[in-house]
Length: 142
Image (cartoon, rainbow, N blue to C red; front, side, top):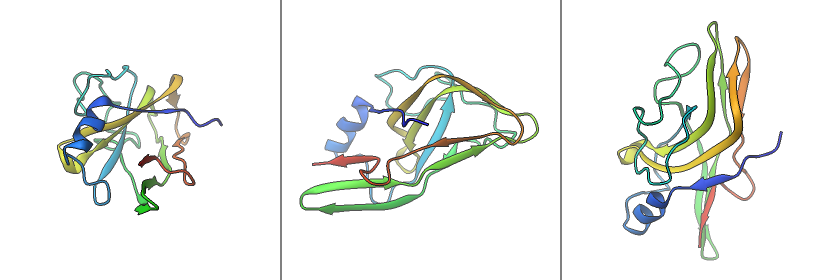
């Protein structure tokens, strides 16, 4: 499966420049939605871009992401997030098209969104993996 491109929110870059995120200690989450998140969004808003119901394997707020590393080497900060897997149970999950990554430890400020190109619905036992680049990192700051 091809890795979908990650699109950073303008608000994330703005907040980053104002010390609005501590990328090394942040608790990141990945939420699903079938509604296109807006480029001007500043926080994860379940009213504007509703997620699937918190049931059938989809946790309220989405999956908590694991930070594999967050370090600066040779003047480049690289944040590496482990892939996350959504696994549907009895009633399934979806439909959803977008994965929204947000910083739940900073007031749910949005970081990036991933457009999977088409809506996906998971049936019982189906899985969906958000594949974050373990080599080049989820994001770099230089």
